[in-house]
Image (tube, rainbow, N blue to C red; front, side, top):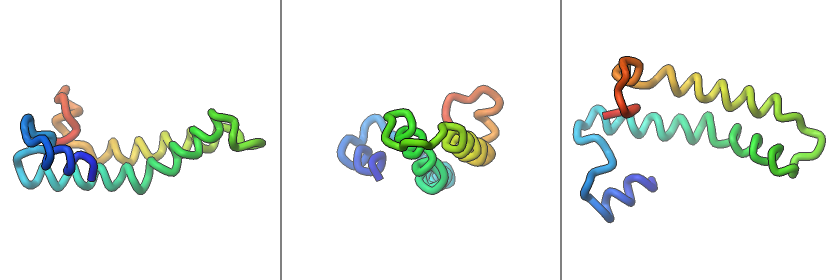
Length: 88
């Protein structure tokens, strides 16, 4: 939603891909980050800040790694060939 707002507010240079399929992939990646990564990162930050007493960083780190691996599996193959962007 933030990227869409910024692109609507400041259209040049565009932040999102011009091709509709690539835009859809970008939205999927953003949604995956929301669903898989956000809570894991929040838990890890709480441990790092010391606001989760008695909680080891091991589980949150593993959750972050798993989320990143899941997101990585959805990336455009061009990224694996040295492309600069995850989409577009």
